[in-house]
Image (tube, rainbow, N blue to C red; front, side, top):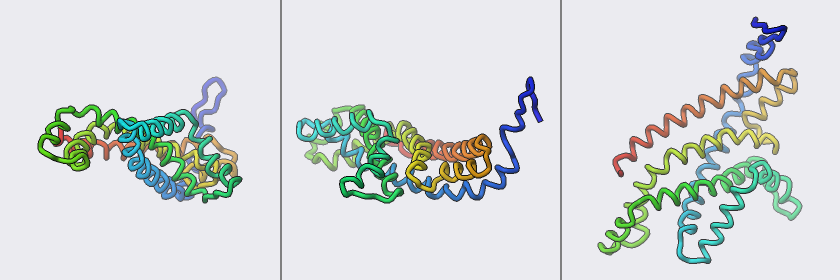
Length: 228
């Protein structure tokens, strides 16, 4: 047991408690993954349409998209979760904790994804749009078959960062009673009066999840490199 000037480092982490609590804490992993994946999927779909609207020449599309992106990027995620779960019931709209969490992360991440998509789309040479137009290829086929595959490769690294942020930010869902990893951790920490051990334990659970996401990023980059 390490001791430095009377400070007991061994008291920072109880291995026995960590091993004993691990199965219970991991019981929140499926909920963490569900909220993360569903929120990211929602953000990807909405983010693409926001990016297209943000870059549109039509004011009726561009300005609502700009306002939405500005609001979501300018407000804390925790506040938005409270609005969805605790605030909306006052006006007759009520969601379960799980649905509120998925909506919260999906709607919030869409703003960041929209800016990533917009910059990725803008990085593609405009000459490709003009060539497609000269070949009488319509807007949507050009976007889907020519532009998006190239933009996707550029967007993969920052989109992966967004997904990692969502995975880690799901810990905020504990405050609206979603039984994910961090909520399970807090239960044990409160019961055993050993918060440090439990918080270190959950940190070492989030870490390999993000390592796996990074590995998936490398595979996707290699797959889409052929489009560049």
